[in-house]
Image (cartoon, rainbow over all chains, first blue to last red; front, top):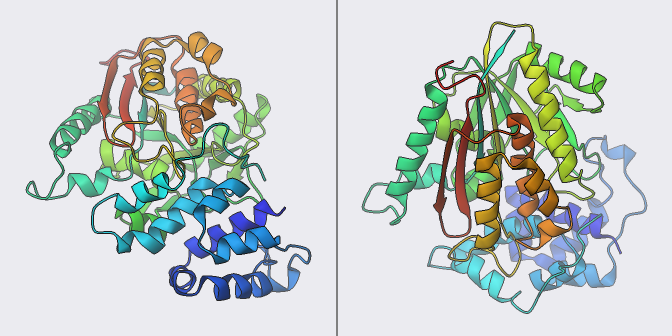
Length: 120
Length: 286
């Protein structure tokens, strides 16, 4: 399990307007590219000093590639990161204020406490 | 010595800025009351004429990340750029520039470390809405130097509630004994019950109104012991998955000591309850 890397994907995509659009339009391709080219970047180090061992599990890769926020919740991805990025990508598809956020919550309605552990 | 003229503990609601600027015909029904309450709260700071603000908040995965996560961090810089692209995008928050107060930062770091808090520091900190929301609400002129103090309420493992209270107590001792003639106000922002990214998010009220009522009472009465007896890292999951932000309120309770708040107000909004508390440790006319 590489919960940290899932969070890192959500974090690095959310802070980059171009990546937000790229992930919205081509989730599988963006996840594949990101894992190959970006996953090992240490954010405060030169590119040459990258991490060599980080990789998604198949389940994590599929959840990200499928824009499956319920699966990400179950995997313990940080809910703030997922929500923020989902708002950036999908709020525009809803006409009523907060409709996207309420739909997001409704899809998680079957989840009860304790929620999955988000520790990394 | 410096004079601690006010302690403010409040929620930070990133939607306030945009909501408060909407024309009346576009504003939601709760906007007018919200603006009135914030204006009244602002006066509790204005009246004590502070010179410098010690500001407690928490980075929301903007600059601080899981590859190097401090538990408590003090900004030490002459300026702080503020707010991020995703806050502009989601909340309509403006880019800002806050002045720093390096002398007070250096003092709090040195003395805080010597009193058992191994504080991290940053000489280049871009603060986010946990710091700028209270500037926009209670000091919109943005004319005072600040010392930002970040806490980790976001990325487990977190410090326990007792540690937040203890840091608040230590900050109080340090501010009270700062060799300066300046008037200091301490402002901290956190949350009551809050759910983000879970099934209980964005309901008609905060996810746990019962918790909110208890929390407001603990804070208003200065009931640190009652609060600590009922709040643990585990228990904070129950009122909502982002409720650990309540520990920033607990830090401010530690700073205020066992004292009733001189000003307490709240507002039940969709999604979360807003709460506004002020203490005047040296009297309202100090």
